[in-house]
Image 1 (tube, helix red, strand yellow):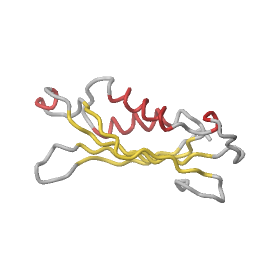
Image 2: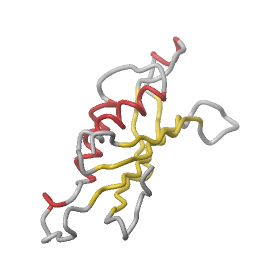
Image 3: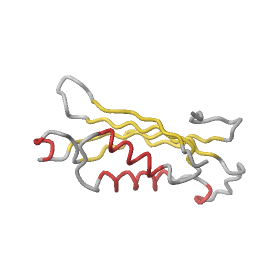
Length: 129
């Protein structure tokens, strides 16, 4: 996989840290009764075009758009598995061809009283580039 940031390969690291959202998620019946808090972290390896930003938002991967995409996916309705949610988020991010690879980490925050969180982390590569 491509490193998250690599100056020699002109790869920029774009990230979102600790995005906490209410999510309808889980396989158990009681998990359909109320939303649960999930924490989402994204690390994106973004291919820089020619290195010139020109202070123009169109020349970068916009983390606000990524966050809005994640919020929309979480808001689509109930999902049973954190793995499924992670895959949906990864697929949506990789639609932007500048994103070469990414890590998605999803944590359910209120599952066990004696654990800070449970969840999954995946890494995916953009196969179209």
